[in-house]
Picture 1: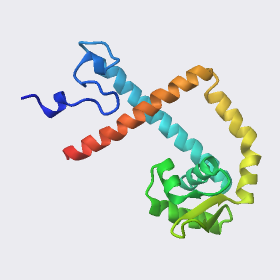
Picture 2 (picture 1 turned 30 degrees about the vertical axis):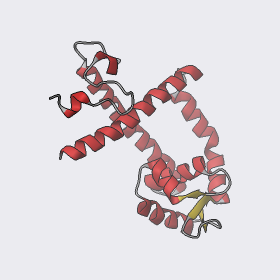
Picture 3 (picture 1 turned 120 degrees about the vertical axis):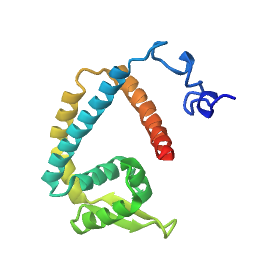
Length: 183
């Protein structure tokens, strides 16, 4: 009887994981050294982005986590506010943490929190005029930083990288579940 793993199909691709069909890597041998280096590169990039986030946060007088929340609200809010759940999902944090931090940000005058008129259980958040002005004041520096980091990417390359990272993000989420189940 085949094992559950060999009989299953990859949740994202639908291919069998033990066949060349389910992999873009050459068969019969895979270069795990290269994949490990890519993972270490992700760790380094993540650490560098964390350092950048802390530096931006320092300019606002807030923590790196609070900066991440402010940026998530800025990205997600389309003019009607954004829910705690949406921000939590964007930054991969529990909603109680986001709620606690946004209350602090509200007291600092950076976030506006209002109960939804459609559903009294939902709190909608938006950035205050003060926060929007501070972000606008930093926009030239922000754009210069992004231009530097992504200067070797044209639109197609950016799209390709985004698609591959999205795939890896989904697979990493599945991998977390598989590792957790095995413990």
